[in-house]
Length: 231
Length: 239
Image: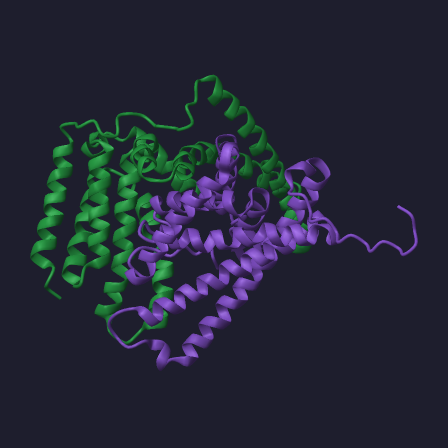
């Protein structure tokens, strides 16, 4: 669901204004976190941003639907939270310029995608030792999609509460909200499954061919030394 | 989206309308003004006026109609979803909600359809933090090459009957293919960084210097801005 970018003028300024400010602050912080490696890494970030845009443009047939991937999870794992935020911000700006998403809501769209990318690496690092790279990348991507989707739903719910003007349909249209929730949650689950399955393949290939591109797994907890055994 | 992106990129560089000849900065200011007005417009009349001016700009820039309809109509999906949740029986209110995103995307598409990307990104990269400013150029440069490779990859899957496989096998297979693009992207980035260093990269991509050079065609942009400001002043209080 995070792939359905929020356009201009639908959400109240009370929501997109702080969202834009927060995104710019995070962007500045991400730039500082890059340190000396930032210029070297920026070309890699550009390549992964280009890949995100490329896969977003190609629909994959899935049952009766066609689904466009985001790759937010794998990009989050490969780059880490700080380096992936500028990537999703740039992707959101380019999409907004193409009429997909809005210029005033670039910050919110980047936060939705970036929140998923931010949780992906910590989840991967914790799971990679126990499960191996492919499964860890799949689960990290599932976590990323879940977080992005939840934030997207939260934004929509907030927009409905904060929106000016007429009373909310939500107050006297519970059946409508239920139908909406049923439809979108179903699609959301399909999206999580599809992204995770693709991420599994990415992890399987990279673990075989270039394991150095994947982040190091967390070291397993040291086994307690056996009593009386000399080191 | 691939077609939209490629077509917009092509017409932005190859178009010959006065909007194409105008410099990027005034066009960026005009589009920003129109989008901000559309977002904050309290009444339907001003929204309709802004939408009409948007279409006037888009049509006079000779952008293909199909491209305009595709790119400028995308926000309808979200707007319809939002309207379905907020529907109160008032068509005017529904129209007001739908017009805002449509107007915003129309001006955005007009802007990118008449401005080559180095001119458009150069002013943006000066106000954005460095990681994002440089990222705009590098991402846009990478995207076309990667799209072609991704398309070739998925075509190869289809030719090898990968679509007949069950989804649980097909999707990881697609992932393995995409991982080759990750590898390609990584190696390409190493080469590009080396090239940037050889060319004397100072630590910042500046873009070209045409974006702020005034031309005679900027008068058209000033005229359009005048029309938008006049519409805003006259119709702001009207419902």
